[in-house]
Length: 126
Length: 398
Ligand SMILES: Nc1ncnc2c1ncn2[C@@H]1O[C@H](COP(=O)(O)OP(=O)(O)OP(=O)(O)O)[C@@H](O)[C@H]1O
Ligand SMILES: [Mg+2]
Image (tube, rainbow over all chains, first blue to last red; front, top):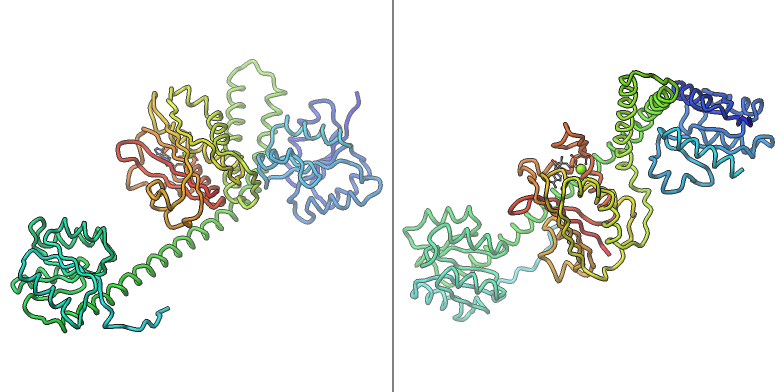
């Protein structure tokens, strides 16, 4: 089977481990977690994921800053990023069809189904 | 603030004398009209009802009022007149034995009282001028006070909003993260743990349900705080209302509620955020539905108006907010439910005020709605109807 590699960058440990469990149980994903955003770039370079799930509000380095680093890295710049965020509402996400400023957003919490759909569409677009 | 107005003591006045005693009326008439004339308009009425009619039809600034008339006695006379014509300056004309009555009249809105037989034209003129000036100041003061009160309550309102807004996005972030954890945890268990015991599934589904509900509340709060990000398009209000109705279709048919529509045709389009306005109507429909037993009725009336040509249609609270050239669309939604207790009605727009705490009410519906409508430059009023039930009036500017 063609396993997709997913990198989750989020400081909320409980959330990342639950998400990892769910994604792995589907059997179609290989998942790596980074809870400290300063290691995101380094881990991404080693892991070379197919998609990055990136939290926006994190201590030290915020999601958008991580995204900029990734976009500026020649080996990583084409990897789609799905932003996970607790500060916008699902309605706001939906009213923009999930796209805000060229990025895919998923509201937290969203059902696993919604998240999967976003992961799929981001990979498809790439 | 105080403008210097040149006092003109010879400006002729518009006066009504309300007096049933012919002799007293005649005396006043000659004082007012004989040169140097005090009055340029002088109307004379001998009953309260004829006085009211004259005041309604003429521009009169000051009334000289005998309190005991054939159709109204004593204090009632002044109460009636000052209630109907709050801007009118009133001077009481009393008989010598009515001293105390005169004093009481002052506390009820009269500016001064004259004792019959104890004044001449010169004194009368001076008293009338003083009274007019006092009344003018009184009105000014009242207006200043009202403005102050309004400004203060707006300030409190916007402070409250800021606090709620700031709180909302902070709380949202802190609460939504753990909620997401719980949700994915439960999702995992539901998928992975195939248990024969139905009780486990019940527990898991209850947790999931509760998590979604908590998320809903936080989302409402966030909506409340983030209204600046509106997405307005030119839309037909009728379509929006019909869409909202379809969203509550289930509750309407379950409770066998009759929907009575009265829509004006060819209404102008409105610049609105359709999703938000839908949210408002859904809230109002649900409130109406929850207030009624089975077989209730909801009326929906939509019409356009200028404040100008249809003052009656505008809720009093909204009257001063709009300018008379502004075309408005007014939506009225009424039910035949149990209504709102009068002592609670001032609180219904407060965040988290609800009388349905036990049955799923959060108390954000109306406060979010009000916020949304006001962000559109409109206004919303919710009142008890005279007979039974509640009417919500929403005013949009075109
Ligand atoms: N049509 C109505 N008839 C009777 N009471 C009403 C009506 N509309 C509002 N109310 C009263 O105002 C309260 C506040 O309404 P609001 O919509 O803000 O909150 P809610 O309906 O209780 O909860 P929710 O957040 O789910 O909307 C209600 O709980 C109810 O007591
Ligand atoms: Mg409600």
